[in-house]
Image (cartoon, rainbow, N blue to C red; front, top):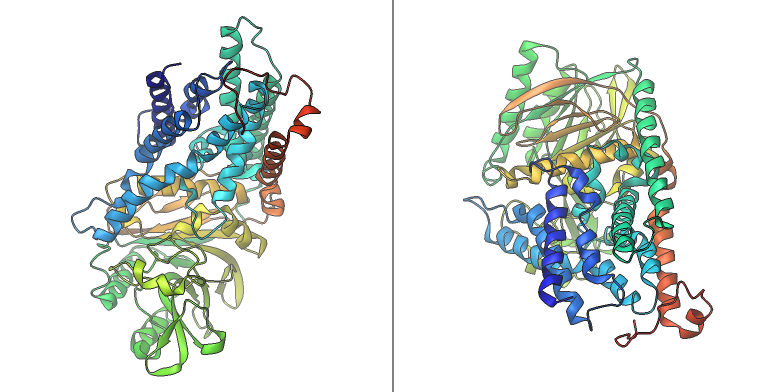
Length: 555
C-alpha cells in the first residue's frame, strides 16, 4: 500500500472518530464510532504487511489522532477575546502532545503484527486500547477526556456501563470495529466472513440488550419516596472578571437565589457553581462575609452547597512539599484549595470537599510534591493558580431539622472525567452526586456539552442522580439512567428547581471498579512478553505465530 494511501486512510479514521465523538454538536450519528477505525486497520493490518519500519507507522497514526483530538478538543485554548496567553498556548501544546498518547496502543499493535498473526493481533486490539485508556487516567498527568466510550452515551449500549464502566464501553467499540474489518478483510481474501471475532460481537450484542434491561430496572427502582428538591443557580458571570470583585460574585448568587424564593419554594438544597465564592471566605480576614452568609442560610429553609476557595495552614513538618511558606510566620506553610462546602441552617459545623484531581498545568503542576521547585514556572495568571490537592473523597451531608436527608458526593469540574472520583464518593456513602463547574472559559464551544455528557456517564456507572451546576451552563438534573430530566438554557442568568431521588443501589462497577481494563492490561503485558521472547513464541499454535515474510522485523 502506498504511503499516500496509508495517510488518507488514517485521516479518514481520525475524522470519523471525531465526528462520532462530537455527535451532540455535529449532525452525525454516534454509531460512526463503531466503524471509525476500520480504515486505520486497512492501513496496517493486512497480509503481508506493506509498511516497512517505525516511521511508516508513526506518521499516519499521528495524523489520525491529531485530527481526532483537534475535532473534539480544539476548544481547550478557549479562543475568546480575553483568553489568557497561558491558556491559549497550553491548549495548543495539548493538541500537539495528546495524539502521542492516543496512538500508543495502535503503535504497539502494529509492532506485534510483525511477530504474531494478523487475527491474533486483532483479537488483542480491544485489550490494548482499553488498557491504554485506563492507564492514561491514573496519574496527575492524565487527561482522559477523549475516552472512546463516551461516544455511546445516547445509545442503549451505554447502560451496560454500570457493569463495565466507560473503559469497558471502549473495549466494545474496538471489538465491533475489529469485527467489521475482519469481515471485510476475509471477504477480500475470498474466505468466509464468519470468524471467531463474531463471538466477541455477539457478546457485545448481549451486553447491549442487558444494558437496555438494566435501564428499565433502574427506572422501576426510582421510588418517589424520599425525594428532595434541589435548586441550581446559573449566574453566567464572565470568568475573567469574577476574580477582580469576589465579594460581588457572592452577592450576585444571593440575589438570584432570593429572586427564586419570591416565586416558589427553593427546596432542600441550593447548589452554586465551582468557585462561586472566589475567595477564602472562611479565613479570619473575611469573617464579615462569612457571618453574613451563615446568617442568610440560618434564616432560610435550605442548605447551601457551593464552590469556594479554601485554605489550610500546616506546621512546616506536616506540610506537603508543594505547600508555600507564610511570610508572617516562617514556621508555617499553606495551600489554597479549589473546594466545595455544605452550609446547613442552624448547624455550626461545615463539611468540605477539596478537589482531588486538578487540571494539569492550569490548576497544578503534575507531580507538584516531587517537582515543587518548578511550580512557579506553570502558574496561570487568572484567579488562584497552583491549587493544593485534596486527599479525601467524602460526601457532604444535607441536614434538615436534625436529620440527614441526602449525602451529596460533590465532584468539582475536571474530577468528573475520572470514574474513580464518583466511585469513591458512592462507596463512601453518597446517595446523590453533584458536579459543580465553571465551563465559561469555553463559552460558545463544544466543551460544555461534552462535559455534561461525561457527567451523564457517571450517573449510569453509579446509578445515582446528578445535580449539575455550571457558571454559564450546561446546568440541569440527570437521572440515574443518564437521561436529562431538566436543563437550563446556556449563557443565561437564572435558577431552577427540580426533584432528585437519592439512590442506594450498589452497581457492579461501583463495587469492583475497572476489572475489565485491569485484566486487559495484564493480557496486553503478557502478549508483549510472549512476542519479545522467541522461546515462548515457538510454543504457540502456528495459527497465532506470524508467518515469516521478507519484511518481518523484531517487535
